[in-house]
Image (cartoon, rainbow, N blue to C red):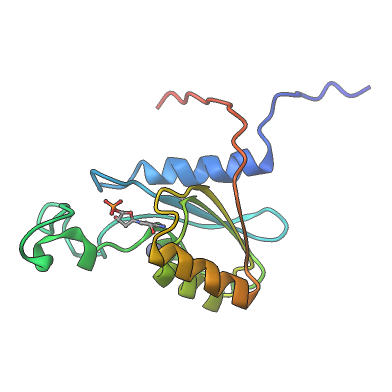
Length: 162
Ligand SMILES: Nc1nc(=O)n([C@H]2C[C@H](O)[C@@H](COP(=O)(O)O)O2)cc1CO
Ligand SMILES: [Zn+2]
């Protein structure tokens, strides 16, 4: 007779949990995003969070959103979590994989997602829904046959002592 533990987390909770834990590495004071790429047979292939490129110091480059000078805002310099996760992968092809992300992908990441062969996007929040970027992402995903749907939160809270 099985005495299996029953309150283990689901695959979706596991992968979105890993994405959210990755987000907590971000230095962005306003929006922390995390991403986890998973194979068709549920093996984690890569992870990422939003940050500056290697060598571009978090203490030298700006983290602010607005300023008279565009060069003094974060937008020219941040690598989004999804692109970081794609670029962090060193194993070959991402063809057919799934991408879990805590925030709906922008149009630039959508292009990279499509071109790398990722076939499904599971996102948590979509706080920029309705923006042109998000609309462009959806149009490209639809045209390219990349499925996307919002993660259904289970309400489970996990506390981890570190
Ligand atoms: N899907 C995404 N993945 C990301 O990694 N980001 C990053 C880029 C910035 O560092 C931050 C957004 O900053 P803000 O405009 O909400 O202050 O989140 C943003 C999006 C939204 O498209
Ligand atoms: Zn992006």
